[in-house]
Length: 397
Image (cartoon, rainbow, N blue to C red; front, side, top):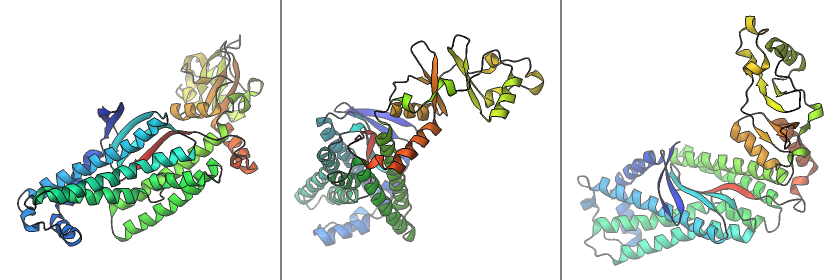
C-alpha cells in the first residue's frame, strides 16, 4: 500500500501506510462499543470507581474510543522509537518507522551480528511499553475521582501498553520475542541455524494464534498470525541467502562468455525465433562484432513482430537497450538484489570496456544454494557470518 511521510523524530522518518486509515477507526469503534464492559473491568481489577453509565451516553463512547485508539498508536510509535534509538547507539541506520494495519514497523538498514546487541535492541521496545504502562497507571491513580473520562482513557492505555509488551514478547519471530529467541540461540548456534530455529518456532506460534483466531472468529488475530508466518518465512530465507552469497563474487556463479549463446544485431527476427525453438532459450544478449554488448532480446520482443514481417525486421529493431549489468567482482548478494529489484531473469556480466564476460541467472543462484545447503556449508559459522540487511521489527497493537 502507498505510504506518506508525516514527519520525523530524531532524524527518523515517520510514515503512514494507507491501511492505518482503516485500522484506526476500526480500533476506535471496537473500543467505543465496549466502554461499559471495559470500565467494569477497570473497576473490578483496579478499584477504579469509574461511573460506567456516565461514559456510555451520547457521543462519549466514540470520543473515548478515538482518544484511546490514538493513544495506543502513540504508544506504538514510542515502542518503535525504543528499538530505533538503541539501534542507533550501535551505529545502525534507521530507514523509517511506519504505522500500518498491524501496528508499527521500524525498518533497519542492517542489524548488528552481535547477539547481545540484537537482544538489547529487541527488548528495548517492550521495555518502553512497560514504562508507558506504568506512567499511565500512575496518572490513573493520581487523577481525581471526578475525572471519569480521563481516568478511563489513561487506565485503558496502561492496560493496553502492558499487554502490547507481553504480546510482542511471544516467540513469534520476527516479533520482538522471536528476535530475543534468535539472539539467545545465536550464543550457541551459527547465526543461520539460530534464524531457522527461531523462524520455525515463529511459524508454530503463528499457527496457534491463527487457530485461536479462527475458533473465536477474530479476524484481526488471524491477520496477525498470517503476518507472523509470512515474516518468519521471508526473513529465514533472506538470512540463508545472505549466508550463502555474501562475500562471493559474481564471477564464481556466472556462466562464462565462452559458454553464453549470443546473437548479433543484424540477425533477422525469423532466424532468432528459429534459434530460440532449436535451443529452447527465450532470451539472448546482443553483442556487436567488437564484443561490446548492444542489448538484450527476448521471446516477448520477437513475438511483437507480425509473422509476415519477421524476415524484414532484425534483432536491432526489437532488442532492449535498457541493460541490467554487473561486473565480475560484484558481490553475489548485491547481484541477487538487483535481479529481484529489476524483476528480470538474468544479468549481463561486463568488464570495464562493456565487453560481455558472462551472464548470471536466477537458476545459477538456485543451483549454488542447493549445493551449499546439501553440503552443510551454511551451518558452518567459520565460513561466513551473514549480516541482517534490510530488516525490520514489527510490533502489534
